[in-house]
Length: 294
Image 1: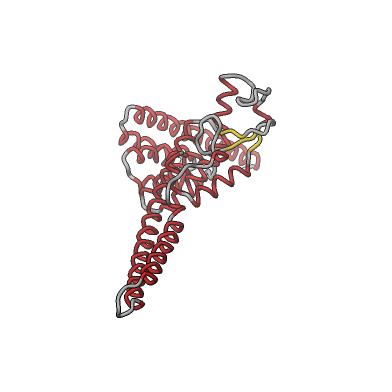
Image 2: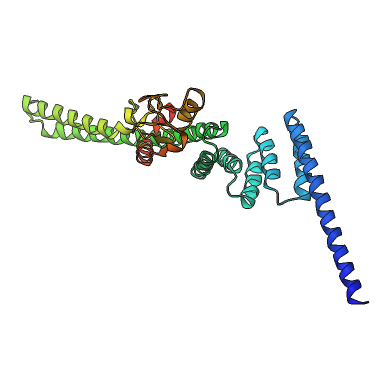
C-alpha cells in the first residue's frame, strides 16, 4: 500500500472519529435537555436517569454532574450528592454550584467544618462572578445558618463546662467558709468575706460568658442602608461603607449617586473595604450568635 493511500485512510479515520465524537456530544446534550425538562416537572427520578446517560456518554462535562447532584438534593440523597459534586469539582474547581452543593451535602453528612469551608469557597466565587445573584444570597444564608449551628453547639458545651466549674467553685467556697467559721459561731467578718468571694466569683463567670451572650452589633460593622451586619463591604470615594449588593441595586434603580452624601458615584469607583470585612469576620468569630442576625 502506497504512503498516499495510508494518509488518505488515516485522514478518513480521523474525520470519522471527529464525527462520532460530535454525534456523542450532541446526544449527551439532548439527554441533558431532557433531564432539565424532567427536573422542571419535578420528575427527579427520570431526570437522574437522563443525566446519568449523558454522563455515560460524556463524563468530562461538569454541568452533567452538578445537574444530577441537584436532583439528589431534592431527594435529600446526601451521599450521592457529595459524590457528584466531588466529580464536578475535579473537572471545574471554580464551579460555584458544585462548591455550594458540596457544602450542603457535607453539612448534612455531619462534616460541619468541611461543609462550612465549601460554602465559604462558593460564596467567594459567587461574589466574584455576580455579587447580586440569587445564589450568592442563598449561599450566604446557608453559610450563616451553618456557622450559627456550629456556634450554638460549641456554646452549649462551653456553658455546661462553665456551669460545672462555677458550681464546683461555689462548693469549695462554702466548704472553706465552714472551715473558717469559729466554733463560737458566724462572725460579721467571715460572713462579709464569704459574700464578697461569691460576688467576685459571679463576676468572673459572667465575664467569661460575655462572648456567648447576644447584644447589639456595633454600628460600624453594619450597612447604613440595611442596618444589617456587613457581608461584602465596599467603600465609596466619599468614605462611606455600604453592602456591595445593596449599593449596586441603588445605583441601578435609583441613580448614580452616594445614598448618604449624594455625591456622584459610578460602580467602578467602589473599592472593597477589607479592613471592615476583616473586622466583621473577627467579630463573628468571637460572637457566633450574630450569625442569626444576618
